[in-house]
Image (cartoon, rainbow, N blue to C red; front, side, top):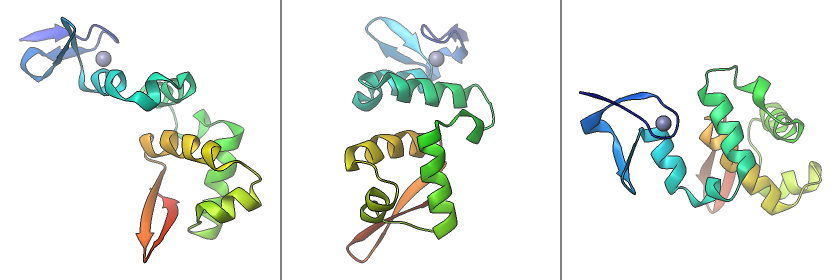
Amino acid sequence: MLAQCARCGKKVEKHRGYEHQGNLFCEDCYMDILSPLKACDPWAVHSAKTFLRGKDKLSTLTPLQLKIVSYIRGKGEATIEEMVENLNLAEEVFRREFAVLRHMEILRATKKGDKIFYILF
Ligand SMILES: [Zn+2]
């Protein structure tokens, strides 16, 4: 049986949908609603949604996100410390952008020893 997501209107099978405050949502929307990061970061929601509409991933990035992705692509891997220094951005700015890029499956983090490296997805 098909139902409609109360947020994006996508058809979802009723037993696979998610109930929240009396409404039915598809998985994507439900995750968005639950995620505190995106709830307080309209830009993250926008970027992720633009990507989910199926456009080319990189064409939806902001100049700052592109700068981060190109830097990591050039180096293969990068630590947050070197990006803060070389890209001249604050650590919390990087973390926010990384959350978006991770959600878009462009970047991910990997642990080596006691260090975290950021690499392409
Ligand atoms: Zn939805």
